[in-house]
Structures are given as C-alpha cells and as structure tokens.
Length: 126
Image (cartoon, rainbow, N blue to C red; front, side, top):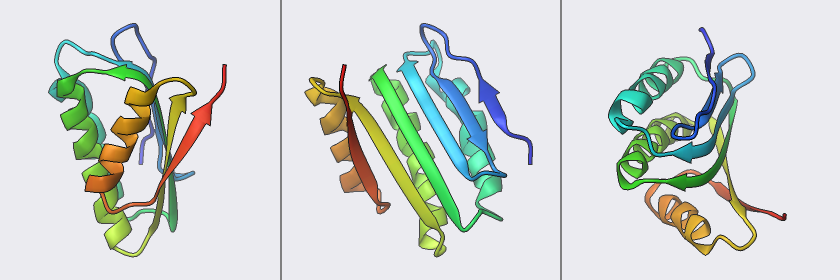
C-alpha cells in the first residue's frame, strides 16, 4: 500500500501515513480552502488500510490550529481509526498540544469523548 506524504503549507498540515510501519501523522495548521477535498484521500486510504491493518497503529496528531470544517474531517479520520480499533487491533492516538494551549487540549478531549480509541494527551513545552 502506497504511503501518503504531503508537505505542510501555511493552510494545510503535513501528513504522513505509512502502512508498513503503522504510523499516521498529521502536523501543523489545518485551514484548507476545501477541507473535504484535502481529507478525502486520507479517509479513503484509512478505509483501505482498515482491511488489513497492522497489529498496532500509532497516530500522532500535532495541530497548532484547525478550522471548523477541518474538525469534521478530522473526526472522519478518527472514525476510520475507531473501526480498526473495534476490529481488535491496537490503535493509539497521541494528541500533542502546546503547554499553554487550552483550546487544543480541549479539542483533543472532545474527540476522545466521541471516539472509542485510547488517546494520550501530550503537552509540548516551549
């Protein structure tokens, strides 16, 4: 399965989805012109990956900021991961947030309350 590698821009996060290592990373800012268009290939990739996932999938999410339309798309990504988790595969989501960024911590907690996958909240110091 081909990995997804997307360079980050001021409006879109960098993305690294690696099926061989079972590592999924989303980092940066997510305020694309069209969130659905940006995230659809990621959701499709996860749907395909879910058919034959590794025993353990590690997800690293380190967003500085995301807009409302991105939050829905990120939830779609998490829902695909939840399906993998429900099929008895380990999925761990590391949610990184800046030390003084209460909003990003709360966003992670909100996702954690919706998605039945273990989240680890990881504070990043300056």
